[in-house]
Image (cartoon, rainbow, N blue to C red):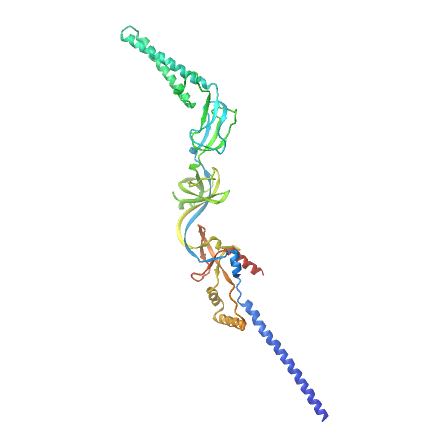
Length: 429
């Protein structure tokens, strides 16, 4: 009897221990089963082409949302060139007569008008021509009286014809000499009619033949100058034009009166306008470039002869889908825009994973959130969409979508660079 009771007690103990071990194992299995779906759910549908920004981040970096617009953009050809002033608007000022510089009235950068005195030259020899001119005037007066007297004598048959002819010849010679001296004096810048004995001029004025800006002064006070010595150089920028070097493949696209926008190398932020007025008819040297001439329009302040420029020649206008330039980012040689992932995220999920997966994902999310207090959305998700760039004009760039997006989808129009940086950080993590 005692043996029987002991056996029953040992059997009951073994059953109890086995039951407890089984329950513990079942509990561990259930915990593992609950944990694994959550881990899988976190990565199962992750999209490497999306980035989520909080409302605070969006506000701080200035992200702006818009749509792809239909813009009238102008196709263009980009070329290089140089600014030129036509030779008829340049002046190298020389003195016709030699002498010593007595005064300089201008310096580089000064604006001068046509006929304005820029320097004076002194030479005693200037007086000689003026003196000869006055002496000839006196001689002409005497010879004119002699001719008149001889005519009167011949009229009364009291004089010889030979004497009259001699007086008339001398008068013509003196008048020719007077005209020669008068022109010489005029070239000096002196009016012969204003000359009087005792008031001869020994200092001549050197005047500018055109209006413009003094680009260089080559002499100094006391310098001796002659016909071969340039005193100063004047440039008139009012007729400034562009010499553009266009390759033959682009030449058929150009014609007279086309508009050009250009910037100078040392100030790329300032844009100027020009208009084509002449197409070249020969190649420049050994290159396959043809010179196209365009006249600069509008304000020419800051433009100087010889400056290198980069120009954009406008072609035809077309209406195309376009976005602001800063809406496009380039990653590893590919251009992208960012689309706000709202309804379009659900449609992309359907395409990729199917309807059953979407329903299951929704059930898992509801199950996971069951019993928790709902939280308001605190940010926006953006998806990266590849595009191909086209014409760029007036701050917009033509794009061709390389992946379909819903009509009227919202895109990032400003701050795309920061959204791309956020995505790059996520990829690295």
